[in-house]
Every structure is written in structure tokens, then in C-alpha cells.
Length: 90
Image 1: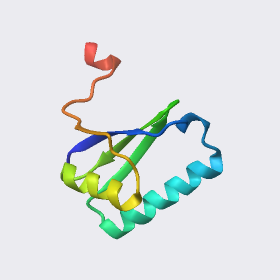
Image 2: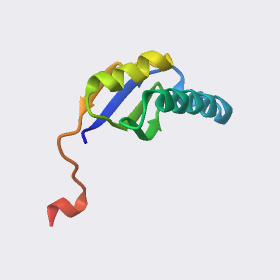
Image 3: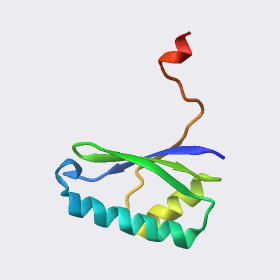
């Protein structure tokens, strides 16, 4: 199943408290339960003004539907075409 990277522009994201991040996570998980097992949240990376999320889903439309239902921005949704790491060089 395809993997997607979602870029969410959220000013001040890096200053969100643990409680705020927990609330965002709970909202996301609630939407995921409603959308069904085809879409999965793998993890997210919080930076200064953005959150980068990794999702597994059958298509970009379902990823964008999750964002819409959760009230999250999805400024960019990119399908992962390959994954490389240091072992790729071997």
C-alpha cells in the first residue's frame, strides 16, 4: 500500500505543549477510526512551524479526507516512491 508524507504548516508547532500534541493525536486517531482500517498513521515529526506526517493509505484522496475531517492542514501530500538509508550505499 502506498506511503505518503504530509506537510502541515502550523505556525508555532514546535511550541505546542505535550497536552496540545496529545489532543491533536486524539483527534487524528478518532478520525482514523471513522475512516476505517485502510488508512494508517505511522508517525509525525514536529518542527518549528510545520508537522510532517507519515501515513499509509490506498490513495491521496483518503489522506486529504482525513485532514479535512480532522480540521488539519495538508499543505502538501507526496507519495513516497522509494526509501533509502545508509545501507543503500552498500
